[in-house]
Length: 144
Image 1 (cartoon, one colour):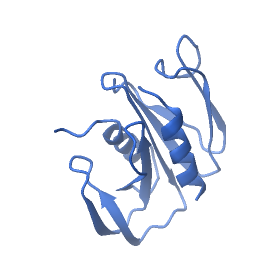
Image 2 (tube, rainbow, N blue to C red):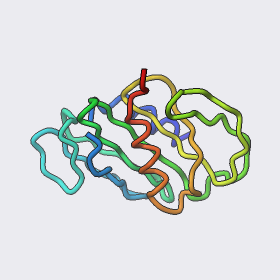
Image 3 (cartoon, rainbow, N blue to C red):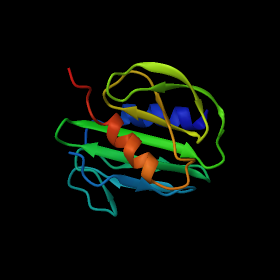
Image 4 (spheres, rainbow, N blue to C red):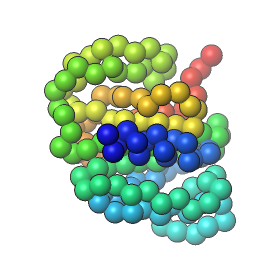
């Protein structure tokens, strides 16, 4: 539940971000992301102000800044999250939702495009690769 709330709040808080290097968040810490004109280790020039994102222990997260399309997105997962269950998987290109048996955990995504919190198949939350891919997909507007 905390992950879902965090994703929802961050999706609403971020206003926009070209697919630059993703901002990788540290688990179990409050991560400070500098906005316009700010300077910091974590940076997104399209945030209107500095944002602080607190992640619980074992929760991994990545924020994507897509300045070209003015979209921000976040992807999160928990290392001890459920590994086998039936989940509604959202196709990143079409938006179609299909009930799918997931065996590698899930990643929750949200973006400034609006809509609902997305659920995509994960990599077991063992690294940032799956999160980076999921956040980049969430930050890409659908093609007409």
